[in-house]
Each structure stands twice: as C-alpha cells, then as structure tokens.
Length: 257
Image 1 (cartoon, rainbow, N blue to C red):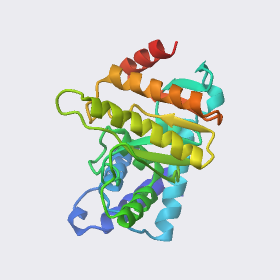
Image 2: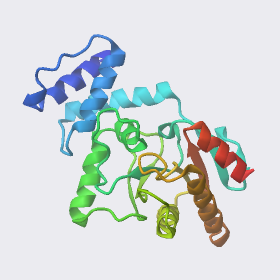
Image 3: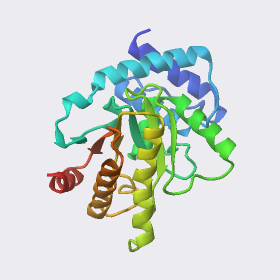
Image 4: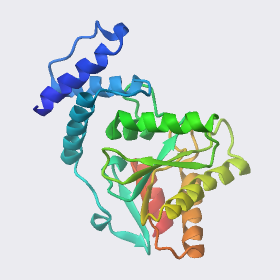
C-alpha cells in the first residue's frame, strides 16, 4: 500500500470500531486525513486491534518517522560534559529514552490533536503504547503519583524506551513542595534509566505546559537535579534537555553556558 492508501485504511478501520463515528466523511487531502487519523487514535480507548491494522499502522508510522528525520546525539553539540541542549520535536530523538510529561491516568491525552507532548508522543508511537500503559495502571490499581516514573517500550519512535512521569500542577503560587516534586520527576527518571542500564535520556520541559510551572524556575530545578545526579553517579548517563519553545531554549542556554 502507498502511504495514502494506508491512511485511508487506518481511518476506515478506526471509524468502523465506533458506530457513533460512522457518519464522519473521510477527507480527500492527505493533510486532513492525517489530522483525522491522529484524532481517532487520540480518542481510542486502550484495546487490541487486528493484525492487519497493526501492520498498516507500523508501516505508516515508520514512514512518517523517516520523513520527519531522526536526530541522534552525535547531531547535537554538548553544552557541558554529558549534557546536550536541543530545540525541536522530541519524537525525532534516537536517545535510549525520552521522557513523557504524563498525567496521573498515564493513558495519554484523549483530546484530538492536542498540542501537549503527551499527545505528540502517543500519536507518534502508535496505539500499542496506550494499551501497555493501561496494563501497567490496571496492575497498579491507583493513579500514578506525582514525582515517580514508569518505563514502556517506544514502539514506532526512534528511541528505545519512553519514561513517563507526572509533574506537579501549579494552581496559584509555586510552593517548596512543588519544587521538590518536580526535582523528584527528574531524579526518578534518571534512576529508572540507570536501572535499565540506559546510556542517554532526553528530558522535555516537565510541568511547564498544561501544568503551568514557571519556565525559568522549572529549568533551574531540572538543570540542578541533573547536575547533582551526574556528580554523585559516575555511570556515564548522558542527558539531553529537549526544548520546543524559544523561551525555554534561551533559559536553558543561559543556565548551561
């Protein structure tokens, strides 16, 4: 199948799963089809799919990954020993692990085409990621605590694993507890990566988006926590601070240089 044929097949399959969606028309333009497919993947509950669907999805997402281009650590200059700074789409990074800023349900974002990193990662990884997260949460039988971390496969992302962590939500002022919990997020991810003998990890800007943690304060906590960890643990674990917004790039650049 061509990429357009895969798009159409995947959309038809997902529409057929839900009678309430049967009236949706499939658009003609590929860009609109891609948006519809992502939306359908976003709202789909965690459940199995047919082998044919998974094969078509695998081929589709792998080609999309190639089109976006894969970024390896060798493509990024170091700003400090063992520390990199890169601005771009975290789903392009081929580090051993990337960090997902998850919510407490750990099932990904269900809002169609939402701009959060949780949505981007689940959309690029494929529907198997939500199913694996669901199995973890069913076994845990409680929501994921703030400051902890879980590890899953990366599926169709170029990295090997995804580390999921729930950051603190800021409602008014930032408290000392909020700062400690954010530091716990970074530390938990580093310790989990080390436990799996990973050599590189890429952090997003945890809690600074939908959870409203102030950018500069969050960056200072992130950098300090990573630097303290690397000083105490000479395990060669390299860290990428991955930023998307210009404001975060400038903040991290000043802190690291």
